[in-house]
Amino acid sequence: MTDKPMSNRPMQKFHGSCHCGAVQFEIETDFPELTQCDCSICRRKNALMVKVHESKFRLLAGEDSLTEYQFHTRTAHHFFCKVCGIYPFHRKRIAPDHFGVNVFCLENFDPTGIAVRQAVGAAMT
Image 1 (cartoon, one colour):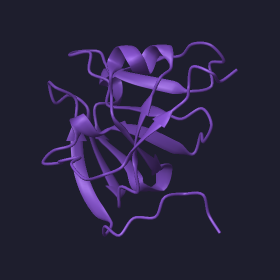
Image 2 (spheres, helix red, strand yellow):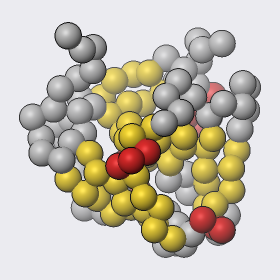
Image 3 (tube, rainbow, N blue to C red):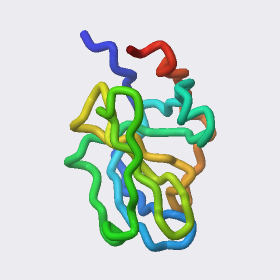
Image 4 (cartoon, one colour):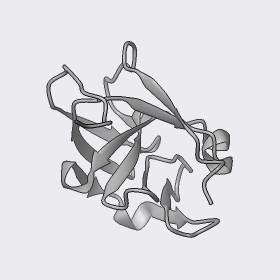
């Protein structure tokens, strides 16, 4: 038995980017759930995220346009575009082989109907 939400949606590829288009990426997911975290940085950036295994994430362009921010335990790696400032994704603290991808950076994606889990990041030590 698994504690992971199951999705009845098919695996799909989505193209994503920052606002200015310098950072381009592609993900493949079935969107089992979306997460909204209450840690200090996530509250401020107000992103809605999907967890994607690193094998299902591909950076297409803009590696040199990314800047990284770390805080607290310096385990998670939050990436922002140096040009427009948008947060497209981060490498997760608890699951470092996964990315948290900001679904608002995905082209033609509508989050309607996908369960949103409230992640308790503020209480992590």
